[in-house]
Length: 146
Image 1 (tube, rainbow, N blue to C red):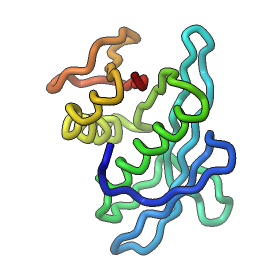
Image 2: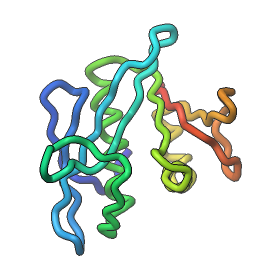
Image 3: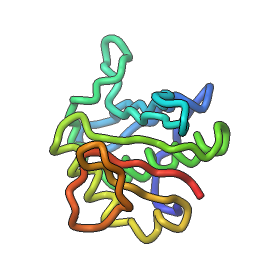
C-alpha cells in the first residue's frame, strides 16, 4: 500500500516502534506480532502507546493526536514488513475495546479495495471466519498476504 505513513524501527521484525506526531506532541507507538496458533499459523497483532515510565505497550490508551489514518497505515506497513521476514501467515487483529475494533473496521472499509490487492481479508463473528464485507460488524479481523 502506498499511503502516507511514519518511519518505523525494528530489531527482530516482530516488534516495531514509531512516533505519532500531532497537536499532542510525539507519542511513541508499539506494534508487536506474537504467534498464537500453529495450524494454520496465526500471529496476533498488538498495537498501542508505549507507557512513558515503563516503555511497555498500553493498548487501552487514547492519544487523539489527529493522525489516525497515518498511524493505521504505519501499522499496515509493519504487517508487510513482518510478512517479508516470517512468511505470509494469518495476522489476527482486534481492538482492545469494541470502539477500537470499530475504528479498525472503518479504516479497513475505507481502504478495502487497495488492501485486497495484496491481502485476503476476513472478519470474525462468534468465532466464525467470513470473507470481509462492508457494512458487517466484526469482532476481529484476519489478513493474509497473497
